[in-house]
Image 1 (tube, rainbow, N blue to C red):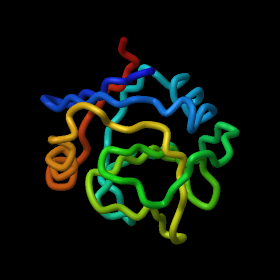
Image 2: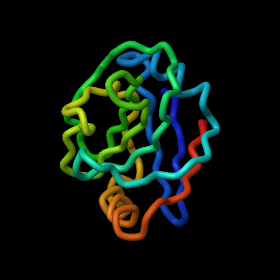
Image 3: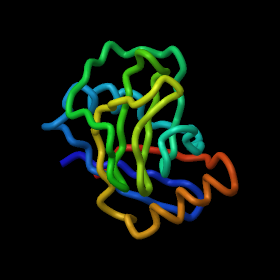
Length: 138
């Protein structure tokens, strides 16, 4: 099982990559690591935080996709009618854009730190963008 660590301030999460369910998406994501960016709060999707990638395209197609990520699930939307992005749900979430409902590739699930996901999402909502670092761990 491949795992990643997500750090932001005093928040730490560990997620497992879903290499069997979304192998191509995991490969693309791994090639992006280590990742230093910021999570910002979503505009359309409810209780979620995201990293926008604009017009970036990776050649990915849909795999293991959903519009309804549960808290602690991360999706990679390969782009299309909206910009490429990574989104993490921290509560009730219906993945969408200004164009309507979207579906993204579920490629990672948080397995450690779940008890603080909601708190972190609310921090992003009320305090603004939060710097993050994501890296592979043993």
